Image 1: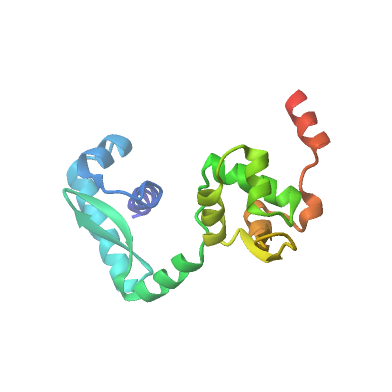
Image 2: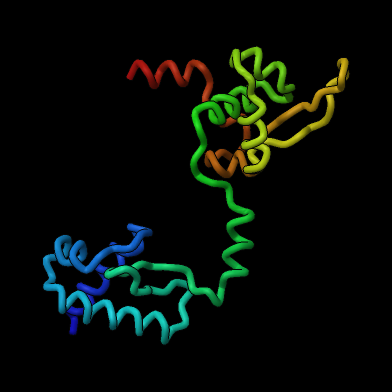
Length: 177
């Protein structure tokens, strides 16, 4: 049925967007599809995903449904997750990253002098997410690490190169608009 296909597609989209268990009741309320029909459509979707041996599956959990990765591909998912940069950065991390991006190569002490606070945690986070790298050591007492941005930094912000970073003039123009 065409109507069933559309309803299944809507349910599938909700499961994908949610990332969490959606109960029968919530699916019924959102779609205005009667609960027995929601159950039937979801059973069809579960079967379709299993038959395709898809990378994603729909599973029934705690009086509801959730879209999950197929356990058969767990090794691939782990590999992907270990190479991905989390999309969320804290404000201190973003502030630290901006300083490094505009002032690179720069040492931690210079970052902290600009920020006025300890930046160990933010630098560690940025380094672990591969947004910054160690570019060498400064010829100064203690030979501190010099930090700069990485190719992943450019990808994260959709930049071709560092010349595409907005200037102070660009930023003040945006605030005025």
